[in-house]
Image (cartoon, rainbow, N blue to C red; front, side):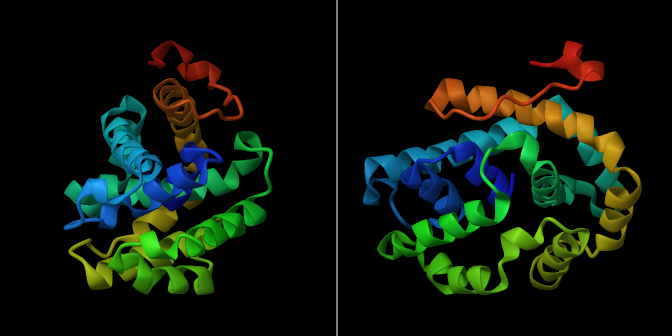
Length: 209
């Protein structure tokens, strides 16, 4: 899962959100440096990543991106999932998307002292560009993937992503919704976070975990 996915699954608890947000960038910082509620969010982030990587619906979705990305197909799918979340947001939350994201920016800014160095540098840019809200468009997803291709070992394959999201969105959507249904229930059981009930696509109900 990418930014919006982790924030959505973390629910309304600011500390749980914060821990989810910083979890990938606390290398070198002991976990017990953070207050218990933020530690819990960091552990939740790791649980979300593990569940995402192991869910059969996500394995099916990764096949669409493997021709261009090979072993990095899962990394790309994590980013692409935010596009699905934006597009289907009205089914997932009673909150409007833009205020939800702006409220998150505010919550992160007021916890500035707990941000790891990476996010003290990058958060102002994320807010300035409103990167998360831009994920509601294919162009926003491809922009992020292009940046990753220039700055990491990720291959340059955004043309395939554009094609998949343009022509195969409806094929992927039932798998994504099944996954979101399952992971929301899993996080509710493990962390007590409540979400708007997510309908399971009828064609895939028998494969649900």
